[in-house]
Image 1 (cartoon, rainbow, N blue to C red):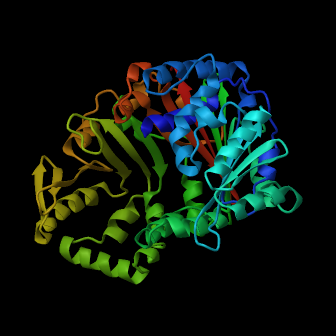
Image 2: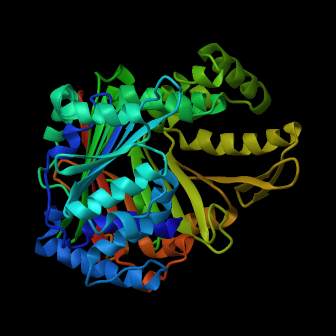
Length: 494
């Protein structure tokens, strides 16, 4: 699965030989209530940056079990055979690639009257005879949902969706949507890949895809985030790799969200406490405000504000301090989430997850750490204390969490190896050559959000770190009261 995902992503960066394109035709055939729309334009990959990026991925494909002929870049789509076969009984390699032009898109719509999700695929036509043969094969299977319309082939989940796609240019299409137009206006014009999400229509789609026991989780996450009305994404090649621009128009921020936005800084300092080979680093500010946002959105999980207050008061009776007002409220400085390489790490093979958070009352933090370890055995949890490094095990003996109070920093990890890797780091992340100056690659106003080192993560996908085309990733964000923006850079060869 990981290899197929890599194939789909890297396909956007291969130099196309397909020469038929229409930048507006596909979106004009998407109904105006399309929840998710994705499109690729291979003709926007003809510059030197795109060719350089395509060359960097060539070894990756050759080392994977993906049929790819460098002399014919369109063969990369063969890796999607399984997905299309399950949708329509055809394959890309035999039935689509011979006739497809340079534009292809997909739309996902809210359920119809039968409650089933609907989808629509569209592609420009380079070879008319091949397109006719494809349509005949699909309709011969009994679907009756493929048609040639102008210079496009349209393939839909059902006849009603196909009819809506044919009528869209003369009726209302996604291209006519003001929300779509405003979102796309915030993105670069020359896009190799485009993604658009209408959040209101997406909610209808999720209603059929998310199980009832997961709805509360979705609601809780939504409570932390701004009230997005849409999301847009554009991806393209640059001289240093792949750039992805993301935008999210949203409603006015709440008072807490405003405070959280103002608190963010463009100069993180928690990187000085992480080891030089850190795999993933996410810096941030004001964990206390994030807790307040989450606390206010737990209704979907069955917890009212009164329930949370009662639970924290019971906690205070057992442990001697209130986690809401005396611990989480005191984490009002910098914090960071990280994956660090550690022998014996349990978050993922060879890696440990850690959280660092600044506490504004260091003396009380140390007392709280000790009180927590002393009280947990009353609830059946086993705790050990090794020089103020506390390990907590579940009642069944399985490790649960490890934590320590290191001066003004609370450090919580998935295992001893990860916390120790942080507290004993001799060479911090700030000394890593690939990290130095990395935030300067982002727009001047961007606030740091993510740094990733690909080499320690390669094992997760059974890849050789020596042949990885992408070596590092960095992301930054800018936001105001009406729109959020993010820039992701996938860096090649650094």
